[in-house]
Length: 328
Ligand SMILES: [Zn+2]
Image 1 (cartoon, helix red, strand yellow):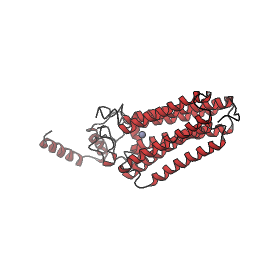
Image 2: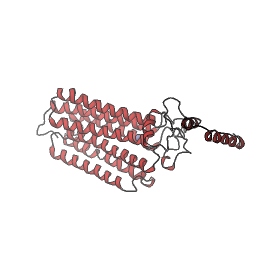
Image 3: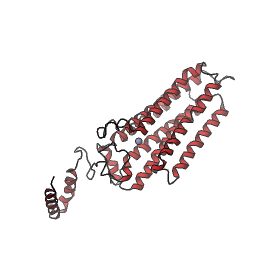
Image 4: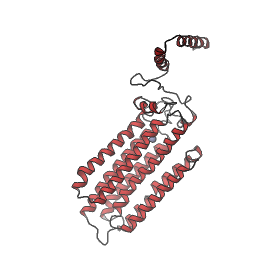
């Protein structure tokens, strides 16, 4: 478009707006926004999508996602934007549905699975903690992806901090049933590992209060912290193998592959998260579907679900094979 045409259009639009009744002016705003790229179905007034160049600096995280950004929105429109197809739609809905999944799993566990397994009060508490942590993790993530487009940078940062805190809570939700059932017959080590995991998670929370925690400079440190909290599980896992008499023990043969698969899912999820693969090879083509963060989200749900099923399995095993003096 040449400059003169642009000015002419701008001038005529101005004139049009000035001489228009207030009631129509409101909808004019909508029409004006509609002249940008937007999605005509269920788009609340005032939401438009931006390109990577147009968004505020604090939203510039992934240059390979070139379009489809929401930005500058007040809280109400952030909420409404969940119904707009943007580059966050899959991120929001994957964890919203994940929340629903773990909520319904909780209802099913309490209503049928645990009573039929002859669960004790302790079992109920452990399952409630695990599933509650998964649900908190899902909701914090939904909150962040909904409100990261808030017009206030401070609000966006607060939600980001909550998203990180949610990941820690999710990791805690994996450790609690894992350690509880692995060291079912050894209350000393069970307490040691549960307490150390709790201390580690609390240390991460404490670090999150640090004013530099969310800065770009601490990006590597943040990843390192999460990796060490998640990787710490290798210590109780190896100890558990040793206590049970090595890799040939029946219980180890049954459960070690499950732990291994859990770590494989976690590692691939994390690799997607940090590498920005595949969008780095197809910049601008995976803005709405197929970006790394979406894989990360899906894999986190799969991982939690896998771990929950494993915990049910190991609980049944423990109920059928009571502790002996030699069991770990
Ligand atoms: Zn996310």
